[in-house]
Length: 147
Image 1 (tube, rainbow, N blue to C red):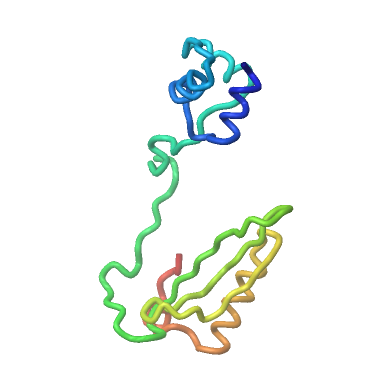
Image 2: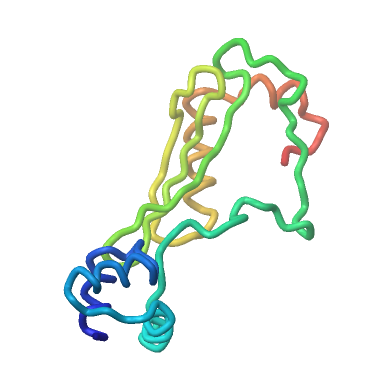
């Protein structure tokens, strides 16, 4: 029975104990759902599904102000955004950083790195500043700290 449960779970990892019971019944193996739950727990397998409340913010984390709230971005090179993401590879991750113009959504500069240090982010920013100059928003708000 464990082998049959494992085969069903490998083929359909989103199925819970009720649907696994139904699949076993199709194969002429009638068993109680509680037994399937116990066997799955012993085998260390569980259903893969979106967990509830995954987007709730932690109250202890600092909330940074949105500096563009009262500003209309109406022309290129007025404000920039930066985004960093990871790309899963066979062994580890690659990290991608991109400097983006907020108005045109053009990627001004980007860098890849296999380590999560700040040097490749700074290189991308320096490259964007060299080719496009500083965005106008930073020139107008140069006395306030940039978050």
